[in-house]
Length: 220
Image (cartoon, rainbow, N blue to C red; front, side, top):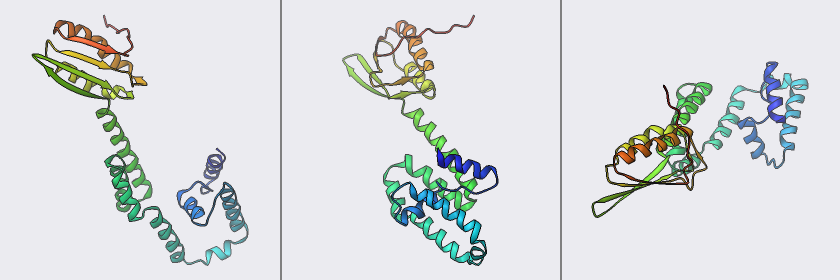
């Protein structure tokens, strides 16, 4: 909170962030920083430089500063690190590589915004697909469907669950399990309640385990 407040106030008066900036934090770590004192001292050195060393800093060639930035940036995105992110799976790699390419072909701010938008899209898509798992087995002439809900089931899963339930043929057994769910969206719970009537009309044996009952709002 102290760093956030300082950076906010600094930006409010037209200044640069003092600490908690990735390049400066990386430079601190590479210099052997171990405690929060590194951030405090970093801010103090910046203050001293601004008050007493402006003339000297203006004589530093831009190419020397560029070398420092390139070196620090390389350490933040080494090929070894990119390879490690790749092995973590597409959920981690795709947003990372899209952000990296967007920054290279545009600029830092636009690239980061593109990366954030893509990461949100990827998160929504993943959430949409990961709301539940369904297993199916046939015993004689009866098909048994077991739907296990995920830890969190959001409104994004509503349509997909509804379509999946409507595809279940008549005279089946359907078991919906919410034992492992911490949160089930109200819209999804309403789908389950409405399905009780549909299941009865299609002669489907419906079993719901740890699924809270909710009142369905009716429009007149």
